[in-house]
Image (tube, rainbow over all chains, first blue to last red):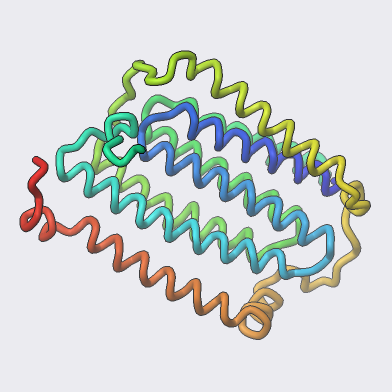
Length: 99
Length: 175
């Protein structure tokens, strides 16, 4: 399979994740859609790494996985804190900080 | 053979992604994301990057998804209200998503990267295996590696502080 297919699939997955963030209002599902977008970026990184024939892109992908794990941990901590304060789990109701 | 595997994995990845955004119950969204991650690991294997595929399955589909399942079970997955804060959000959002996909695809395919249309160069047998990645991580990318480990530690401490009981009892005036 040529590398183009992987890149186009990665673009499709990224657009799907962005669509989910635009459509859904539960913070948990928005975090899941962020995972989708990060994974699409990972797929592009690994595909380019294969295209160049150099392993450095894969190291980049591993670091992106670490960042994604950090984001998940902090995001889920926030969700648990919101739930414990009996606030609604809906990003449209939690808009006090909006400009 | 490779084409068949690619299309099976691609359909799995895309179906999982659509399942994540289409399911009403967050629990099913998490399960769809697990399907997506396994398909993506298969794609990584097709791209001869064994270590990234293994890390994907162990770290994501193993650890991170277990965390998600616990939090969804704790919080409880209620359905979302049908109320739309922005009029026409259901129609505008897909338009924006399609526009983003077209833009990304055009940007990549019209670039002057000549090697995009090829299968990539022939790589040695050890390409992308744990030994190669480990050597890169510990020799060339030692500083990013250590920085990311520090970041993980900070995130773990931050999550404990955020979700601990003590803070709510002390300073909670909002509820």
